[in-house]
Length: 204
Length: 252
Image (cartoon, rainbow over all chains, first blue to last red; front, side, top):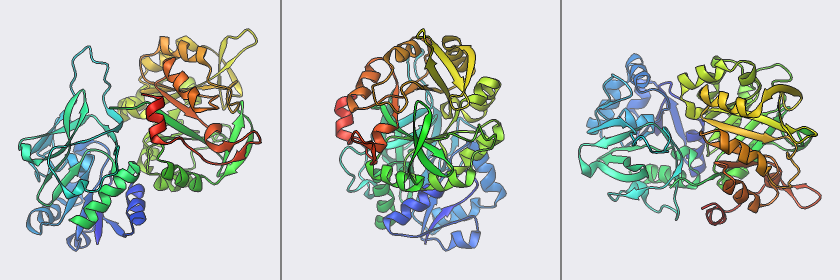
């Protein structure tokens, strides 16, 4: 079963519907035994970093997420804030992340004469750094919808899947073994996001 | 590479979608869920959903309906209509709305803009301003879906909403709404000269060239209604949206 972990950070309707459109069903839960039984895990999220980690703590989910990720090696996909909490920490808050991947999250920082706005919001493209079946069969002119102020800085270059340019190149997706994280919103990115979710479901 | 956005505007009235002319005579054009599904197929950049009777009827957003619509949308959505309080904004974000659009409330209580942008980040707070020219061609501000004339001066209002933290400004030309006669280019110039945050222009698009004219005049994004829902001189309902390649060529 494709399990979407609901830890109270944002609407999951679009993710559920997009998976349905691809032809699969998913379940949304914060129940530990259901998460234990998951064959694929999606960690979504929109909002504040510390709030996300606090919700995970208060729902008692940290242990089961770590077990599924590190011991069972269940394929996992973090989306936006769900990606960010896969790292070690973020400049947005003081809580520790899940530490599934060796990355820290930093705020976008531009020179003072830059006209770029924070957050990075809108449609942008990706450049491949490392081949992954997550990005197989992507349609031409693929683009993804981003809304974020913080971005990953990977301590191992080999974890970087794609980069995106906004003022400079930043890590827009990373992966290490069964752990995958994307900064953009596949569920808000039309057929491109749909292909990505399909890849996650079918290739992992 | 961030491209200029082209945004269909959907007007919600009694659970159905309508299209107006000069903010009047709403004509029923269809079911919002079906329309959103078509816009999914067309891969639109973003959608704006406005409940045009919520403020008038002095009621809150119809959360249940909004949630149904948002869950079907595979693109970002901005919502406006009937928003007066922080708690309502919070509820809308939880439903999956990417941006909230404040209009009447932002003018009656500008502190709402400040408070909301501090809590939710200014990228998610859009302020809408409805503009209509008087008989001398001066830009006048209206609220309550174009029915209440305000004494505010456009330029000072623009500066005020930006200062209070609006992340984006959504300018509607009441005179141009639904007419398909082209955007109010003078209005775009005025706004462009007086704000530094991105602004979306709406009202008047009748052909895709109108989009490029608006962008050349300084708009950060273009919104439109009639051009995406009507076809031909008899205004038969047909949902459409330009192809990505066409927009790339037009708006690069």
